[in-house]
Image 1 (tube, helix red, strand yellow):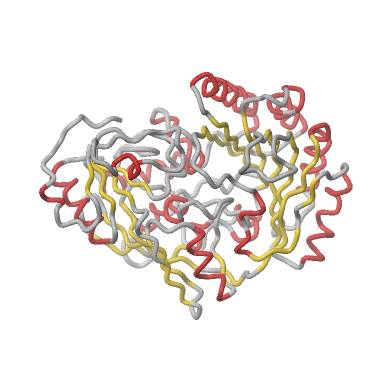
Image 2: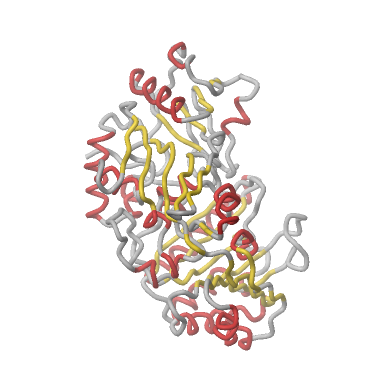
Length: 462
């Protein structure tokens, strides 16, 4: 839904400490640009919040002027262009306060997982981050947060103890299991549909080290490895976390040798237990075919980025995902027909992956939340890079073919953080069960009846 273009008086925003910018201002373009360059934001006004007071002031102004609002921290999830309205950027709000005694961290709205890791690692503690520590904590957690060690510890949202959040009426609230419990429920998995989070408190894990990394094989072994990995996932303990990927890596300096410019099959491993036990568990994979590049090793938790080697520089990306009931042999064949070696090294999808779910990801949260991916045994995701329109169209077509081929094996749902560009309301609703979606719509009507938070993966009030 696109807001009508308007240029309201900004005098009421003069109390904000951070920059208040409009199109044409010198710093405007840098302020609105996020990590995903596929979406170009053009809000009427952008507020660079420096703290909670700035967010409160911006939301009160938006409420008074009926101006729709979007929020951006790092922009990793910027799959939808923000047109008109107000964009609040939180990238200046990066404070992280760790309490070693309670094993918790208070994390500000714009902090990245790298900020949390830097603050918690000296205490031997760790947060449940995803495949890149460059991503923001709050947006990731609001969408549920699928961690690298998810099978061992569950979703990031499961560990949240409280939120500080500004609702669309401009009121600053504390939400936890005892205060605003319905708001607390909706924020854990419901994305940013009921308020703008200024900070959260989450549990940390006593996890200074882990065993992990990537096993890489040349493309001709892709089919054998996929079948071996699929069989292997049915035998491993809950704590073993893994993802099978087909990688077509461009010849750019950001990718290390010898992987640069290659076509690879990879299994990424993350194991929080004893290193010797982890080595024994992955031995069948190492025997399945000749390993070309073996990067699995014991590492500090702070080195987690070495496991999946996500891009660290902004780029225009098209991402998508699907939750899968299972991976029978015909599903593996369908996957290979779309992205395997037979379709060539110049296939437009950079990455196509299958992640092993289950374990702690299948268990109910200690306090009920809105995460709806607990029934999936596997998870498929893909990424294509779109530097120019012809390539973008090829990426889009390849994405559609892959997900159409795998649809018979899906649960019918996606995960909100990796859903990609949201479509109509029916498409947006696929991130939740019908029951949870109906409850979220009711909460939306309670906290945002005017639908000010209407950008991105936004639902409509009941």
